[in-house]
Amino acid sequence: MGRYRNFNVLAAVIAIQVVGLAVQVKRSTEDHSTRLIRLWAVSTVTPFEKAIVRIQTGAGGIWHNYFYLRGVRQENRDLHEQIQQLQLEQVRLRQDAEQARRLQALLGFKEQFIAQTMPAQVIGSSGSEQSRVVYIDKGSNAGIKRDMAVITADGVVGKVLNIWDSSSQVLLLNDQTSGVGAILEQSRLQGVLKGKASGELVLDKVMSDEEVKPGDKVLTSGGDRIFPKGLVVGTVTKVSKGAEFLQISVKPSAALNHLEEVLVIMRKEEREPPSSTAATARAADILAQRLPSVPDQPPAAQATGSGVTQTKPADTPPGNSALPKPATGTLQVPKAGTAAPPSAVVSKPVPKTKPSQPQPDTAGDAPQ
Amino acid sequence: MLPNNVAVSYTSQQQIEVYRFSWPVAVLVPLMAVFLQAFLPLRFPFFSIFDLPLLVVIFFAMARRSPVTGLLTGAFIGLLQDSLTQHPIGVYGIAKTVVGYGASSLGVKLDVENAGTRLLVTIGFYVVHELLYFVIARGLVGLNLHWSWPHELISAVANAILGVFLFALMDRLKQRA
Image 1 (cartoon, chains in turn brown, green):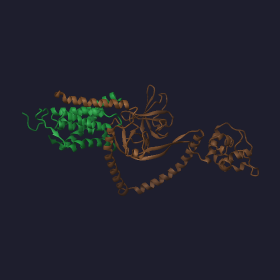
Image 2 (spheres, rainbow over the protein chains, first blue to last red; image 1 turned 135 degrees about the vertical axis):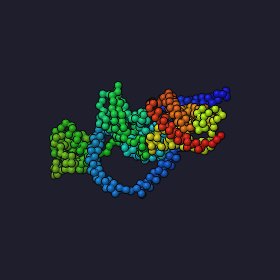
Image 3 (tube, helix red, strand yellow; image 1 turned 180 degrees about the horizontal axis):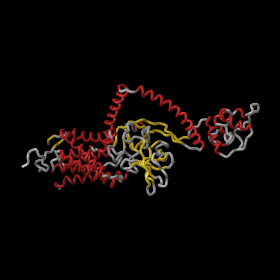
Image 4 (cartoon, rainbow over the protein chains, first blue to last red; image 1 turned 90 degrees about the horizontal axis):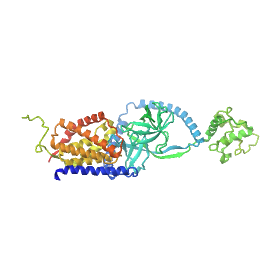
């Protein structure tokens, strides 16, 4: 017996671990509790990681903020110019966004908005090529919960997998156990974004008869209920035909190998996109242009239909809001083809009315 | 008759030196290895090719030359490494247990003090470790892993080169039993 002592110990230690593995694999689908050994290991390692990251950040901050200021003036000038250009761009984009929101509101869409985020510092990794997870310095004490989305300014990073008091484990997009609902920006084709064992990111479940080109942007579809819709995930780099589905390689937008700071999405809100009162007429205008034309109306009716909503909101009955019921109060105003520019409809309703004539309260019974 | 400066590869049981380590070294070195393995790939992504905890297992096992101590050291370090992943705990544990046992058993029979032997032994154990990990992860856990011989061989050589320097550094921590 003593002769085989070493071998017996080896067999016993391996057997214990194999049984332990089998139990964990069986429980993994129904039990998300954290193993005690994992808690010990993380509690042992993460304080050192936090300390080093803080020292590194502090030292870097002192150097960059107080000593290494070479080229700052030039950079400041460049940034001012960039701000001016971006402000011009912002005006244009705001108009586009407003128009999109109005159309979404008219169609009854609901959007998920990022209501609250929390910045966190990446302090460590798993240290294994087979396990693509990172650790952040915020945990349950900061309100982090399982399955919260983690992003950077560049794109999606992953989701929170395990939480401890002052740290959390984040599963990266490119891990093979990860999956994200995704949509191609141009073609609006939907698929599932998965990681491969090699760390490559692929878009799966896109039928092979569809056309996808390298360079297409991949966004979150919102279908997984973890990531809000429309976040940038990556760019298509390679497309090849498979038997049933296309094999689409995607380059992640976020630098998953060089993560330093991330944002955890703490709260999402699902609401109908806001639309300003002034915008109503424009939305109606768009609809009017797309719908079949309506017969000409008497001037009085035209005046009440257009002017009341825009210029005398106080006189408008509550049920006459143009957003939920665009057909009653707004569609009769600009006839298709003859509609005035949106600005004219909003700001100049008066010339179409007869000031001397009493305005009938026809808001609720506008011509059908 | 061999000259004195030629390393003798095969030794008898009586010729080998058995070393021990102080308890701070025995605890802190494995912890440091696991910590660095988790921390450095964030700053230097290429570092993920190395497996510092494995090198520490091989070094401790070969120096102590006790199979039971070797396999227990391997199990401890492997389980610690498993704890930092999201996979079930035990995959690295089993692989490093076997490596710890093998390295200490080999240490009894071979002179593992010279750099050439260390290089070859580390290459061999790295490949054994990766094979075991691959088999356990696929067979028991159901992970879909990809095996690439070129990648594994390059990693093995890189780890062995690092190991030679690291072992020389850690030799200073050894105490004669």
